[in-house]
Length: 77
Image 1 (tube, rainbow, N blue to C red):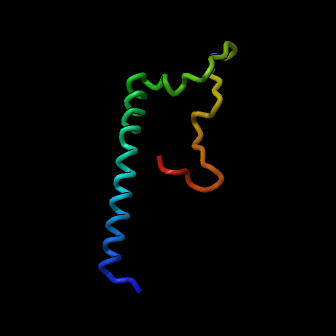
Image 2 (image 1 turned 120 degrees about the vertical axis):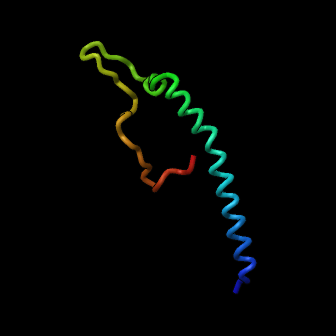
Image 3 (image 1 turned 180 degrees about the horizontal axis):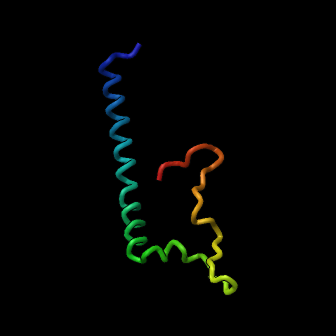
């Protein structure tokens, strides 16, 4: 079949590309966390409108719900 040396190189290449992909997500995650902490979460609720009736926020999304795509787990990043 396939030589053990070739298998090791393939695993090393896949591991390196996976690591680079993960590292590419870190700057975006750091910016998102920084914006959220810097604004005390107000940036997350910016698209929401405040209703006068009960002084509650009406959002185009449910901020308390975790959304999962019906096609399976979400894509990385």
